[in-house]
Structures are given as structure tokens and as C-alpha cells.
Image 1 (cartoon, one colour):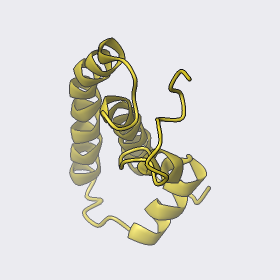
Image 2 (cartoon, rainbow, N blue to C red):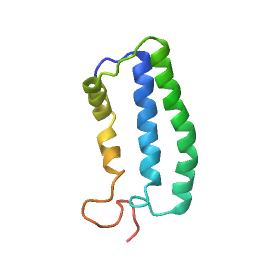
Image 3 (cartoon, one colour):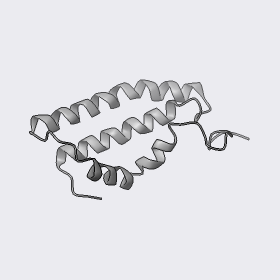
Image 4 (spheres, helix red, strand yellow):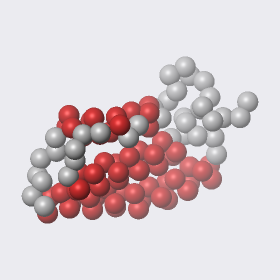
Length: 100
């Protein structure tokens, strides 16, 4: 994982948490309304944490986001796997955790 400032690390952690919640809410990738509801409720606090992490970066005068570095960090945190869960399944089949 690339070297990140403390504030950048917080942004990445919060962003991955938001992605995780969004992927659980995605109706094309989930099988239960209760799971999706709980994820949607948690998404609010995860979004606040992301906002706060970005505000911290700004307060610390870290006004530029280095996209390549952040992309590498996201990749190391398996963000690419989470991003895939935000769209419909490619094969048009059931979600990976669906019961047969």
C-alpha cells in the first residue's frame, strides 16, 4: 500500500466503508430487504465519517487528492472488488450470495 498521510488513510478507510454499505444496498447484489435496510441505515454514518475525513484533509491544508496514489490504496484495500458489487452482475445471474 502506498504511503498516505493520516488524513488520507482516514479518507480511504471511510470510502471503503461507504462502498461496502452501498454494495449491500444494491438490489442487484443482495437477496434480503432487511440486510439492505440495515446497510442503508449504516450508510448515513459511514458517509458522515467520509465527510469528516475529507474535512480533516482540508483543515490540514491537504487540498489536493493524488488520484493515482489513492487508486493504488483503494486497490490494496480490495476496493475494486467492492466497486464491482455496485453494478448488476455481469452474467445476468443471481447475486453471489443468493440461495439456489
